[in-house]
Length: 279
Image (tube, rainbow, N blue to C red; front, side, top):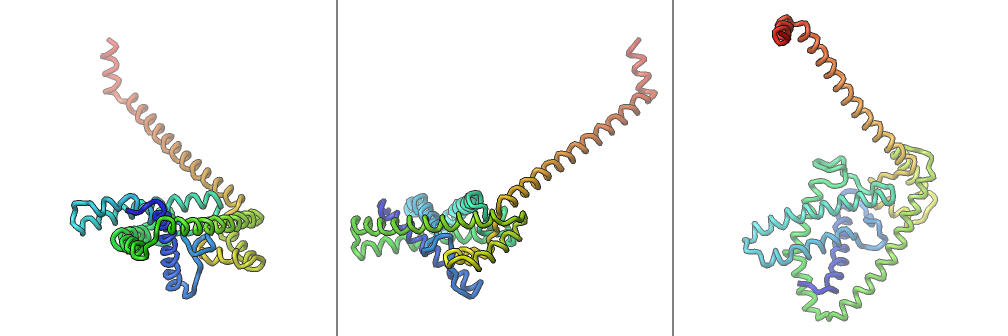
């Protein structure tokens, strides 16, 4: 098992591995280098968190499970796929609510959930976490022991990485927050138009750090106060239409029951029964 300072180091290692993985994917898809993620540096925190979750929750189970290797790998794969999918969904929801932007969208991919997660990516996370437990973590453990890094050495590395990480987060969040202000100044309520105008504005008038965000998330959907208000109005309209439909169905049913009641009142057999009951 890893010590506290080694676990912190793992976060940065897996964040960097995730960044490399995303770089490779974008090289194949867009045929060019794209610095992925909302941070400036080569780190994707969601991968770091995923690697830590898999390590902390499943290391003991993986190492000490009485199951054979194949069912053990399948079990870890399924469980980590589910947990990492929840993490990705929550991250997408949180960032959208904080910055009014949909940073990634899987709506065009099969078996997606609200465009925030999809089956293919979930399986990829599961495969990555399984590989981390079976291959990467033991390799890191052996490398630390081979190099002879002490707790103080690792602590020093952690402090340096945390310092750089805090600076990166501060600068990156300032850029993203400014991006929110730029979008709020656009007098449009259509997400596609807002996204197009903001992207053109940033490419024409802002520095490379802002342009990097646009390139990093090519499928980003940018919103502003007007578009959010418009979306709320549309949601309320849908609720009203749904409620109106239900009310119309109930009214139709009441009319049918009233017709049935009138038929029963005019039925001679019914009337005869009433007469017998009244005697």
